Image 1 (tube, rainbow, N blue to C red):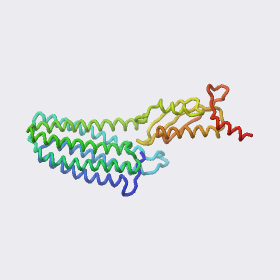
Image 2 (cartoon, one colour):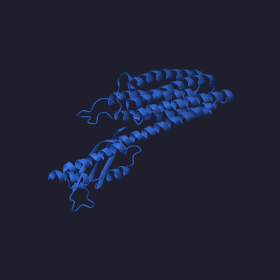
Image 3 (cartoon, rainbow, N blue to C red):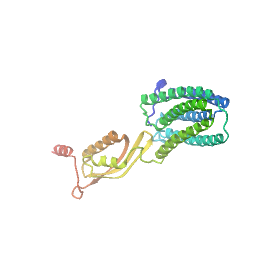
Image 4 (cartoon, rainbow, N blue to C red):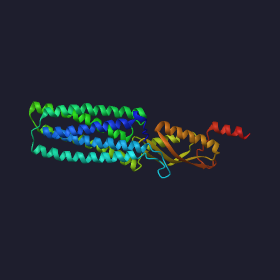
Length: 316
């Protein structure tokens, strides 16, 4: 997944700082939630606990992904981050259903909530989660892993979601102060649960697609086939497969029919196909098998003109 550790300035340092800050905030949320009788704050504690797990798994994944390939792991550990993201997202789904249960129970039996405590603790959460999200974004962009990395993106999504949900808690606390309606606390918890569930299902869907070797997210196989067919010298493409080794490492295999030409000429076709796949689809690992068809029996048999003339020139 192209996650590289660059000393103290890499994602490892950012993740360690984020872990420490998130753990401290979880303790604050639990204490404040119990003191103020706010399910919304306790829900935020659950949300942040899942974030803590996400950051921890991301840190472990960065370590494994930096390890080189070997004779038993020929692709390296690119999918370590994918597995980490799947475990993290699954935990999110479980947390969301627990929040729904507690919120429904609170709606039936509302409890007095100290809205002022809610607002102050949530304000601290907005600052903390926003800062961590910014650090994760800058770190991932800076080391070249990109926001497309499913594991780093899952951790980033957690923090962005937390920033929004804690901002909603501030608004809810203000509404409780104004109206005195304590059911607002439970309603906020439902909203936080929906947010957790939405982000969790999104990551689960994408990670399962990678693990099942489905076509990479956002890629259309017919467009890949059309691009290969447009290369001069390509007569036909079949047995085309495209999948993800990691979230940002794409692979492709296919059979390409070309004219019955010398390897010195077919090498040019192979080079053009690889350049096209890397430039247009970010596919950097290819396994391409040429099928040579005799020109007299091949329909639309094509040899690159420049290469053909160069071959004839050298043959004389």
